[in-house]
Image 1: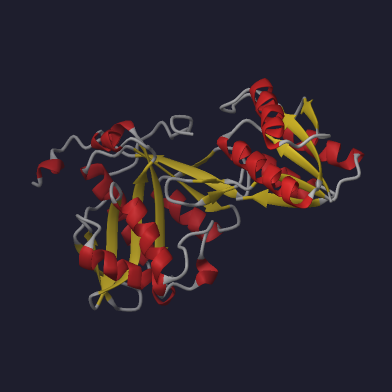
Image 2: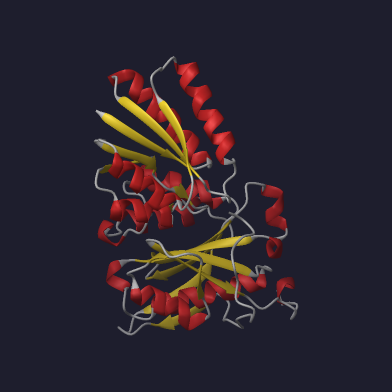
Length: 123
Length: 198
């Protein structure tokens, strides 16, 4: 399967990265990683980019393109997915509130409503 | 997350404090009390209520289903949360809670410094009888008594009855648009000395 992984800079993105690399290694998916620009995130775009590159190296996964995407995160992700031949777009599956409520942000909503591919939310 | 939410400038209140007993629209006598410690029998009663809860009314993954998962959920949030329980004939039939938005247990001592997340659940057979409004107001009254000033919640954007209920007591919509609507209320500070138990 040809998988596109979209990352922001949150802990949720770090978890999504780890899970996706595990899965890639297990089943031998083709993977492309894009890091969106989300200034309010815990990690900068550059930090998240470095973390993705390092994690790939650590996992021994090669032939994965890692790219930074500028502009509005939701539309940049969906545009990128549309340009390529992807079977699945993978993003973080929401955060938990102190109460334990699942919260999906506006980027997730935009991606779910606009992406031409199957979308996977990682929990 | 914490500290980034917008709150109304105008405080809301006063609100009634528990304990109280009211007659609902169906003539049932409903008793509203705070759960001072959310353990033992009180916890068992509320676990029982959620076990009977119709899963079609779940919101954003809560309450969980199955007694064990319900108990784990309530125990996890139970330590520092503020809880108000409504009962009919001794059985828990509605529960409202405030959970502190902090990872630091010591911060809970300074209730006004932190933000509190609200949720309320009413057992299906007791919905549309005015119990939710009474319970919500009493939770906010109790919150004022213990010094809480900032309360927020999220509600599914299409849940108009719930949004209307929250607006009636003073919540205002905040935050960006997504599947959930975030709402917040600023409570008047407790300067009447009610905290001394008087």
